[in-house]
Length: 429
Image (tube, rainbow, N blue to C red; front, top):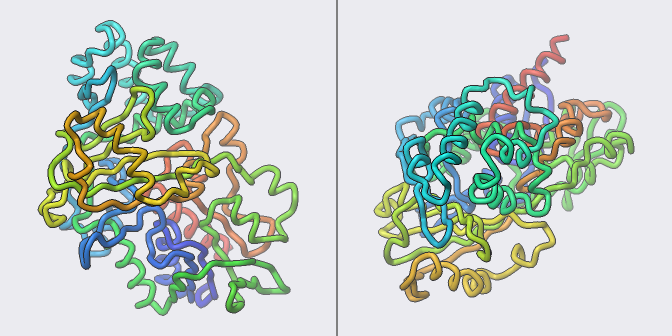
C-alpha cells in the first residue's frame, strides 16, 4: 500500500495537500509545477525582499475549517488573525456599507420593503443546510422572485455580470447559496501572507522524501504497460499513480489516451481568467477593505484595499490596493503590461475617489491567470468529473469539483483530503 511512485501535477493548495498526505503515508511523491513558486492562485510575490503579498486578493471565512486546521497543523496557527473589515457597494456614485443585517437595513439605494425582502431571502439561504432543493434553478430568477427586481438590478445583477459576463443569468442557484452560506463577517489572514503556508507544505513534502519540480511544465501523460509516463520538455519519468490537479480541460490536452466520451462529458471549457492590478500608494485610498463596483462603466469589478484589512506597517507603510477582474481568456486586458493597465484604470479610480492623482502611486504590479473561474450554469454539476479516470492510475481533482462552493483555498484542501482517502480506500480494497 505504501512506497508507490506518485506524480502530482500542480503545486496549488490542492496539489500540495495531496502530496503532503501521500508523503506522510510513505509514498514517493514528485510534484510538477510550471511556476517558480508553490501556491497556485494563492501564491505571493515579494514587494521587497522578505515581504510577501498575494498576486490575487485572498482571505478565508470562519466556515473554512479545513484550511484553518492545516495552518494550525503546520505550526502557523498563532499567525492566523481574524479582523472584521468593512465592505461597501458602489452604487449611484456612493459607497454604501453592505456587510451585515444592520447595514442592509440602512442601504439607501434600495427601498425599505426591498431591503426587508432581501434580508429574509439571505437569512433563508444562510440557514438552509442542503442546497439540493435549489438544483435546476438559476440565481438570477430566484433573486428576482424572492428579493425583488430592484434588488437584482441594484445589488446582485451587477455582481453576477461582473463575474460571469454574458452568462450571468445562467448561473446555478446552489452556487449563489454557497456564496451566502459560507461567508462570515470576520475574515482570516495569515500574517506574512499565505505563501508561508505553501512554502511550509513544500518543505514538509521534501522532508518526507518528496520532490518539487518547480518551473517545470508537463507536456504529456501516457500509460505504458504497468506504468504512467510523465514527460516534460527535458525528461520523462515513470509512476504508479498520477494525480492531476490542473483544470480538466488541460488534463484532457495532456493525456491523449482519455477517450472521446470522457472529453465530451467532462471537458468543461466555459471558464474565465482572473486579472489583478495591484497599486502601492503613499496614502490610504478609501476607508473600506472591499468595494463591489456596481455602477456601470468601470473596467474593474472590485476595489480591494488590503491595508484597510491588514496594517500598512506590515508592508513598510505602503497602502496596497487590488483592482480585480474576471474576463474571457481572450480579453486583451489579460496580456496588457502593468503600465498599460494603470493608464486604463486610474481615471476610473479618480471617479471613485475625487482628488486621486497618479503621483500617489509608488509601485504597481499586474497578474493574470487562465481558467480561474468556471462558469457555473445549471448544467455544470452534470459535467463534474469523478476522481477516477478511464486511464488506470490517473486521478483528477481540481477546483471545478468543489461545486456548489466557489473556488478557494479551503475547498481545494478539503477536496485533497477526500481524494487521498479515496485512493487509500481503493488500495485497501
